[in-house]
Amino acid sequence: MSRNDEAAARAGEAPEAPEALEAPETLEAFKALANPVRLQIMRWLRNPDTEFAAYEPIADRDTVGVCVSHIQAKSGLAQSTVSSYMATLERAGLVRSTRVGKWTHYRRDEERLRRLSEAVGGLI
Image 1 (tube, rainbow, N blue to C red):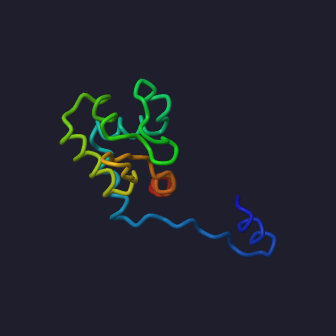
Image 2: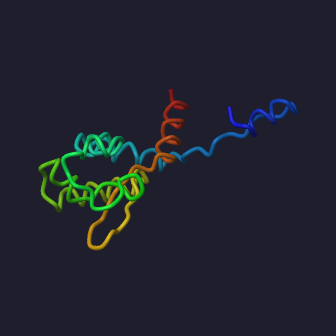
């Protein structure tokens, strides 16, 4: 429980509801994650230092994420396919991209994933 929620409880008020994802946003995320390769990429991005240890980082993975060329090399897929998959994940709000020189890096949007998790919990 957050401090604001604790203060509200002491004052007899209802705690603040977390910002929920709207139905179209949730559906878009589900569609993006329905592809097994995109889902696997999301799993890899959960622990980038471990999952991409074989690849020398171009920039700080905690700050900017994993270089798309490393995702492509690990997946064994064509660069165009990986770029398309990452664009789908980004449109769904599941990853964020950052340009470093000529390279695009991706990292998970943990806040968005938390909200998606809460939305799923509210469905069942």
